[in-house]
Image 1 (cartoon, rainbow, N blue to C red):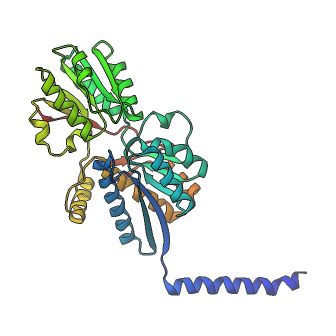
Image 2: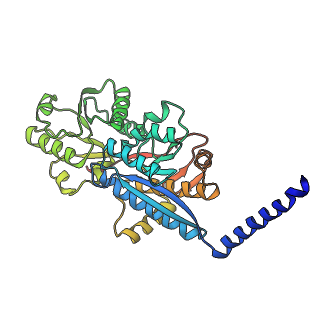
Length: 360
C-alpha cells in the first residue's frame, strides 16, 4: 500500500510547490476585507464622517507599509438608525463576506453586539463604550473608545470643585445618556434638583423649561444632536432670564455655526478625551493633508487606531477567531489616541478626560 501512495504523495507535493511558486512569481497581494459602519447623514454625522475618513486613512497607511496585502474597505451609512445599522451589518456579513467591522458611530453599536457575537464577526466600536460591555462576557465585541462614564465623572468633579448645589439635568433617551445620567445622579445625589429626559425627536422644551426652578447653579445638557441642542438653548434664552453654566460632552464643541452658541450668553464647559502627543499630532497632520480639514470629533483618532490594529492582526492570521484573540491580547499598542491595552478583555481603561471651557 505504501508503494502505491508514494507516487501520489509526490505528485501532490509537486503541484502544491508549483502553485506556491506561481503565487510568488505573480506577486499578487493578499486581500483583507474590512467593513466600516458610520453615520454619514444622520444625527451623528458630525463624528461619523470623520470616523469614515480616519478608517480610510488607516487602510491606506497600512497598505503603504505592507505591500504584500491589499485592503478592501467596504463602508455603509447607518443613517443613525438602529434598524438601518442592523440591516447594513447583515449586508456586510452575508453579501460582502466581511469578518471584521469598525462601527457603528455612537450608541448605534448596541443593536449590533448580539449579531456580531452570534455570527462570530469581530466588531470594534469607535465612539461608544457603555455599560452593555459589562453585562455579559462578550468575545467578539471590542471598544477602544473612552469609557462613557468618564464624561459624567469629569463633569461631576468640576461641579463639585465649584461647589454648585443646585443642578438640573436635561438628557436624551439613549443608552449612552442613560449611563451618564445614572452616573451623575450617583455622584451628585445631594445637588441634582431636577432631571428631565426627552426623546431624540424632541424640539419643544418650553413646558419643561418653565418647570425648572429659578437661579440654578448649573445645567447638565446631555442632548443628542445639533438641532436639539440649538433648540434647547434658544428656548431657554427666550423664556428665562438666568444664564447658568452649561455642562455637556464634546459634541457641543463641533456645532456649526459656533456663533449661535455664543450669542445665547451661557458659559459653556464640556468634558472631552485628552488627545495629544507626537503620534496624535502626526495623525492630525496626515488627516488634514488628505481631507483638507481637521477631524470633527474625538473618535477619528480612535477609529484610526482600531482599524490599524485589526489589519495588523489580520495580516498575522486572518480568521475572525485569531483576530479576536490578537486584539484581546493587545497590552501596549501606542497609537494616535494613546495607549490601547485590552489585556485579555474587550474594552480599554484608564484613558484621560478633562473639562474645557467653550465660552467662559
